[in-house]
Length: 177
Picture 1 (cartoon, rainbow, N blue to C red):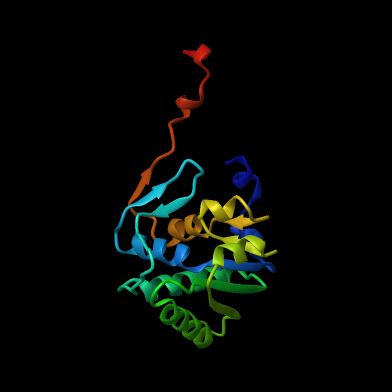
Picture 2: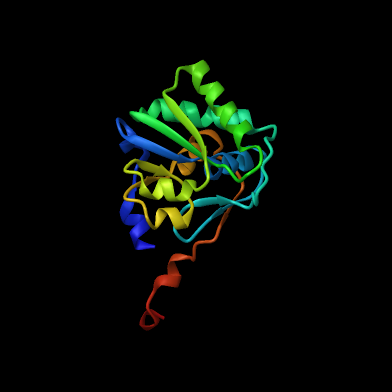
């Protein structure tokens, strides 16, 4: 857990940096927030959704809005490049990639979107700043940024959040009681 905290960079530090996006991880959480679904704040302070994508994904009413919201935020934060990765084994990943690419082209955003078999490994090996809340990736990357919290604070401040972090008193030593 400490490794994650030590390797987290603020979203303001994305300026002029290469960014690599864990596509499904980011989009599905923003879709859930926009649709009023519950979001979990983990003990590592990361926001995660309860959506399950085990081999199948379908765009929902909130998909286009989520991609646009992410894109506008990235535009403000001004990374030098944005590389989106989507899981090839997940159905409709090609359609989502086309949707992301289409919006990027219409907005002149310098994005690369790829559908590959093992995005987790590619993200973990990348020198870029990872945009993810996948713990298995966060524990291996050199740098990651919490774009989800930034987006939700700015765009969906009333999103339903369930805080799973222990209260501060939990950390007191037994001698303090």
